[in-house]
Length: 240
Image 1 (cartoon, helix red, strand yellow):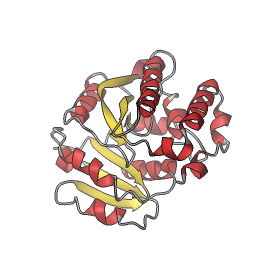
Image 2: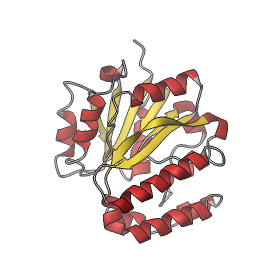
Image 3: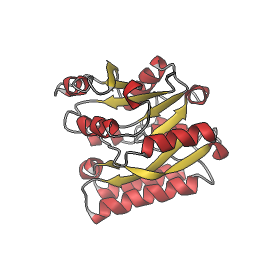
Image 4: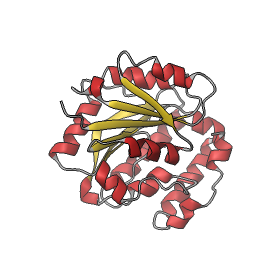
């Protein structure tokens, strides 16, 4: 079977979360899952992340490659990909539905899409966490009509289009995933039914008010690419 998908996951000190993502990939009913190359772009983990990732090699085709900040790690993985499609995911998510990857791939192939994403939900959090992720999902659906909006939690790209758009901007200091996704043609962007689960750790570190303010400013600057190249304090304050 010719391989059609590569999965890229940037990671740094994710020993607690990455195994949950890899376990959820093991449960996917996507026919080529066990042959799909999964590249863990590690940014110098010191907590056993690499060893945890490699422990899945008896069930998944896992490799560890050098990474960096998310944009750097994602691009590094994408450069090693030879398949038509590349799926970018964050290390702290998991796929609760075993059909999600198969359905996303079907959408890409049969509908000739350039980028497919899905909704986000909080694994364990407060009503405020749920509300913020619901707002994120709403903006994704609005973006499907105005300007595509996707996050690095789940971005399934046509690899050729990904590089035509320049890949992830490694100089971007904030919302590099949105900066890339908004360049996709509206008619080539879709949101597949379902969701990925993530944590509320970003909200805990930055605070809900700070995250809302960052989100609002992102929307206000959606046509201003220079905004994303300036330090908004996101990585420093998030402790990444």
